[in-house]
Length: 99
Length: 76
Image 1 (cartoon, helix red, strand yellow):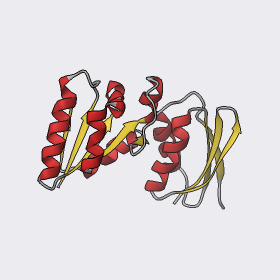
Image 2 (cartoon, rainbow over the protein chains, first blue to last red; image 1 turned 30 degrees about the horizontal axis):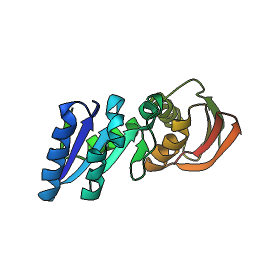
Image 3 (spheres, helix red, strand yellow; image 1 turned 90 degrees about the horizontal axis):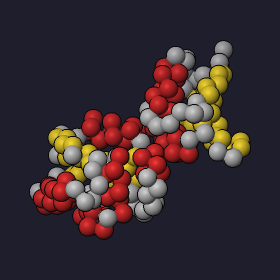
């Protein structure tokens, strides 16, 4: 089973912690998780508690255009993608939630 | 006969760079060549990746000037 998540708010918002906890629980149950970061959500890519999800096996893709506009620093292990990648995640996910 | 056309997408940013490339490709025949011109750096990485995912072939990515790229695509 695959869970897709869209996160558009920055780390100060409670959504980030919600996404972190949902992702960890899903991974524990053997569900694969892909997260797409866009708009202010791209700031999560440099937020360490969020970055740690990568070690749990979560796939993280962000909108390169939005990140560049916000001068977000490039981070390893995060795919710099586009809306095409978001569309692919939506298409391939069994469930999709957005924040 | 193989057709080769050029699509100038300077000034366009994601996601329109991919959308307009895809719409143009849909109007071509299999084997036709499309050269797309970008001045948006993220698009130079993402559009080739996306069209490859769709089964087309990226023949080359050339930086022709500062902040100007040409991507050659062959339709599947």
